[in-house]
Image 1 (cartoon, rainbow over the protein chains, first blue to last red):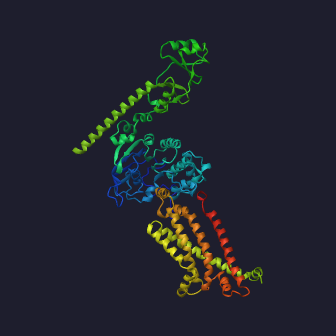
Image 2 (image 1 turned 90 degrees about the horizontal axis):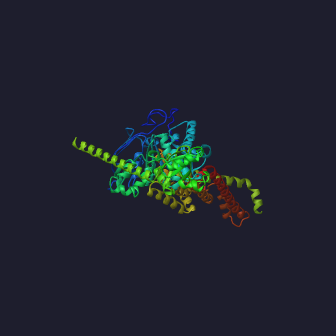
Length: 422
Length: 215
């Protein structure tokens, strides 16, 4: 290998090889600053990317979303200078990388692309080892790292290391692609529509994995997609780009959903913003209701008195682990002639406290009585949601979002006014 | 004297000629491969340069081999030199063409990924592009070898080495006792050599093409 430095230290972390990184141990995210970036391709008068400035915080997941041909991939590729900007500066962790050796820059910025981009003539292990090898890591360290990365993306090292990419499913290939991008522990990870070519179920799974991974690693992730739902799910903040990479809105998913900056954004958000908003809130974040509960070992008489006491007309019967078991209505006990075993309708659907409000709504809509029990970590009863709870929570959320957005807008206006006057 | 008696009488001479034939083809193939791949690597990225390389090498191939060797004799003299030059030139076309086609056929997304991971220009070529283009290049080498086996026989015209000498001698003395045997032995020898080389290429293919891209 002609491009491997022969004298690298055991750690391989010499400052010369690994710029813009923090101290020892795991590298977490770095800030990315784009300052008036432009790109005009030779032979074209219109710039493909026109004067874009953007600040991405360390450890944040930022999604570039927009219609195809809008220059979002171009903008992403300018961060690792696969496309050289015509003008403007790129700063990572405060360090200007615009004129740095591009090869060195890219070895310190993870890069994952659609259809994984795995090298078909190399095994999974060789693919993952690509960057560590170029950085001159020792063999044993590379081997350990490959195993660690496979573990991290949920693939059994012993089983997958020696396989070739074509022996993997699309989802597995994509996981290896992410493992390869992260192998040298870069602070920044660029992902160009990485889940664009896999089936919806696998994509959903990969998105969940990425969220989990990011929770562990806290890298700065820049992710390009044209799927707005994907953007909402993964992103801490979303950049909506229109043609020539003009930023239409750069904000949290909540703010974009409830307060789109203009017609372009609202058009892109699409119908059902309020429904999409439900995806962003979990059941544990809203006020769940209560129903009277009883257990099997309770005397029948007390159950009757619960029903008669007037709070609603049903009782939730719990099993011995306090898990929801049966719904009991006023007439049920009579019809079953006082036998608890035969009375009531079994609980067929519950939601956990970690479920999204969308899941809860789904469950409420399919339940014939319009309510669903909420369970804790071990399946134990913690409350009940029904249509009213959901509607109230959504109204509250939307109001809150709107207030925040207006406040945010005021701040921006004030800032603009201050800058204008000074 | 029938053919088998002829062969058993002259087998030492036949073996020596076969060895010389094979060795000439082998050495010219090595040279053609090195030059061909270099030309391919230098030209594949520009449209016109790649086309120029392909059309130049195919132009060479249209020159009749006898004529080319005839033209070379006044310049470089008789013997081994014109043979080596002619064979190497003829071997270039399939290698250059397959090398360019192979390198251009590498999925641009893979080149993009290699770049994005921080591979240098040379690293990309050596670790991604050439390995992926290797199967078509090897096919080109195989085709070129088959061709050179036959063309090498013409080399005897310029007093070159190899089985061509037998054929020429036989053709020149048609009607004499061993004429037909000589031509037959020379031709069969070339066919056998060609088959042996081909078997060797199959083996090389199995050893050098990674399992991940083997057809």
